[in-house]
Length: 256
Image 1 (tube, rainbow, N blue to C red):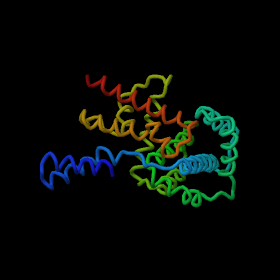
Image 2 (tube, one colour; image 1 turned 180 degrees about the vertical axis):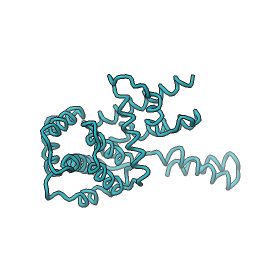
Image 3 (cartoon, one colour; image 1 turned 90 degrees about the vertical axis):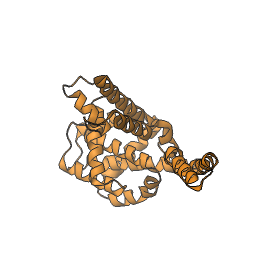
Image 4 (cartoon, helix red, strand yellow; image 1 turned 135 degrees about the vertical axis):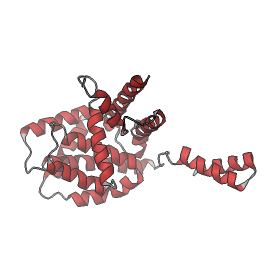
């Protein structure tokens, strides 16, 4: 509420009118309070990190088992994905345990989503990062089958994403992944760049910049860590920011 209070006072002192103060309060909210990460205590942060970690790897296991079994190739790809995240050896062992727990017949997707819901409602950017992890694993073999998509949709709805928002994120993540380092050049690279930012090719420069800034804010490592993203899982958020930056740079270059 700091932005609201400061904006209210500044609006009043500048205009000497009540409506000017209200305008200042509204401006303070949108420029400061709205995008500010909620403050949580050290103990709450540790609880949030543990819950996020558990939810991610439980759900990764559940999605991997979507077709009824986990192949040797899926196991290798998942372990490689864990290595890419930059997990510590201790966290990797725990991640494998949680992955197996999520893949078991006793695992309840609904219970896992219910347990996560409070954290998700408090930290929507963290929930988006959760979906990014799940989408990336589901796409890791180059294919997203109907059962995997169905589970991803359930998860998205369970943590507050509309069907439209989920479908857009799915397209954006796929496009953003094409801008990963060492990714070969693609003929439709510019079209993918627009899709990576979630904008159309006829969007104005101003709208494109707004979309870019919003995404960079959503994947800001410090903000995500302040909401509960474990420190050794921050690599994925950093890479996502780099991919968004690469897409934005390409669009700017094409419009110069």
